[in-house]
Length: 356
Image 1 (cartoon, rainbow, N blue to C red):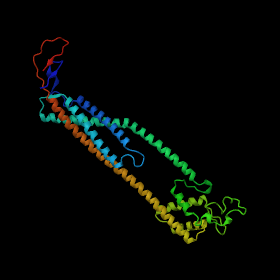
Image 2 (cartoon, helix red, strand yellow):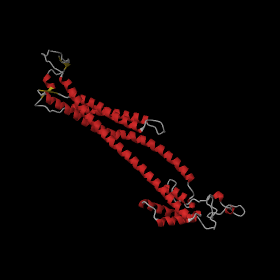
Image 3 (tube, rainbow, N blue to C red):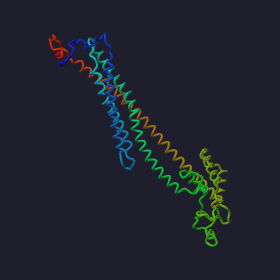
Image 4 (cartoon, rainbow, N blue to C red):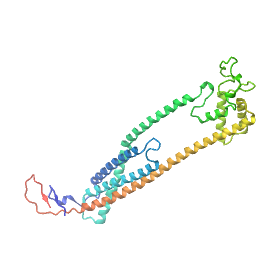
């Protein structure tokens, strides 16, 4: 038997009649929902803190992606179960007592109270996560973007130092894969160090720009101009792009490119055609590998998003069940409170009436 001290001696006022009162105690539902939402918010914040502390941008440091994924799933499930259990119990324990109501109806109402408390808490938690956690994540994203900007700036400086002069006809950017293969396509077959001594001026003075004695270019025996113009480089890029789209390099384009290569390097037409075929095959293989890696990364992200959604559904379903169950448990404890009345005694007006 549980005793209570009441200011109002009318015990019948605290028990609701089954036919005259509503079957929903919104005060208890909101109380349980707010408690569950607050606990969910605290646990999610703690989970983000533990997650950020377990990852590292350095190689070999921090947890693996698979471990972080499993830990995230486990933490989300634990958060839902713990918060829903607290919210459902509070909603069931604080609801009004229904007098003259069948036991099965009481169980149904308690279950409904727990479910409604979970539903309100889920909506409230979603609203909190979209605002408060958004600021936390944006702060972390700013830090990451700052670090990324520093890395990009460093890489830009290095690329600018390695990039050839624009006057040399290099229209491709340093990071452009096509530029490298075009450079290797027109690379001289004979290194400049093995070039004849006539490549220098008769008095040993530096050769004039644009002549066959340009550093790194072996001059042709007949003295022809073997430089590649920016327009020719752009044309080669367009030919390669069309070949990638169609899947093969047409024979006419191959012959034309071989003529340019033969003129540039002094190679024979057959050797030039072989170089064109080999370079295009390597270029196409690199493009295919990059596309495969991009598709693999996109597929991995898709699977992670799908698995995350499915596990979130399972966690929410567990939360709804736990909230409904604990609400019935809290309701049972609430109904065990028995009030026994006795004749009220005359007391001072400021002294509460004790009913045991």
